[in-house]
Image 1 (cartoon, rainbow, N blue to C red):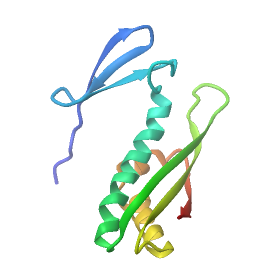
Image 2: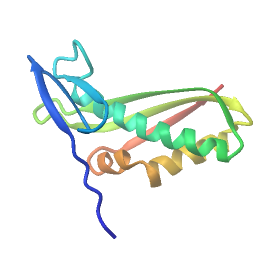
Image 3: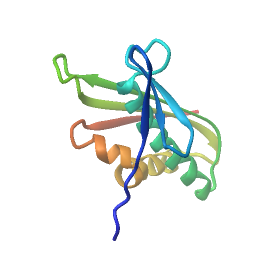
Length: 136
């Protein structure tokens, strides 16, 4: 089976601000100071939420759930000294929808975090990822 290679281009704007992405696709801004855009470590948490969220919104309709609201909060605890990597990550999933129950919500979250989300599998090798579910 062939391995997939991802490629991005990152261009320096000024200061600690960069713009980058797929050379043939949309670009995103990264600001190392977190002043004009989220910095790299925040974007890592955003990538985790975006990956898991994409999985969940794909799975729930297959479980006959119609989402009416979906919000995620992600908190990462970082090492105090360099390198200031994430030591633990906790996700809060806030879901509401028609025909949504705890079993369906948990099933979609766990399938994402344990099987499908590539970002989770990349991060969890160094930082355990936990979650809480909030319905309604």
